[in-house]
Length: 126
Image 1 (tube, one colour):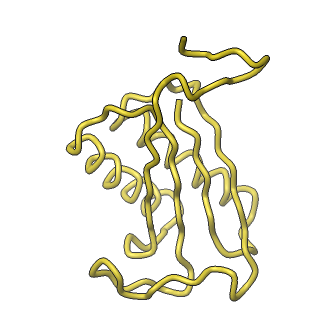
Image 2 (cartoon, rainbow, N blue to C red):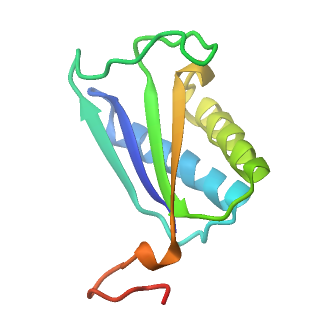
């Protein structure tokens, strides 16, 4: 079950937010084998001056409209799967809402399966 946090500049529509979450989860399902029903996405918007990223770190040319996607997921996926996931996220975002590939930053946080509870205080995967 991935947990996704999307960070972006304020001013985007709810439809834009949904399109981001749709694009990210489509890649998680197709590239990383996440269950389709495991969609948990939180969108965080920031006022001008609240997102400070280097414009060229990593060999890219970022605009003033970066998009940070943080994904918490179960540990154990191979590096090739992660690389495919990054490409899938960017491809889906570019196609769905014309996000510039250089503006997409993805960070994965891997956790052991016992670190999840989806409600009632129950360790879901134990």
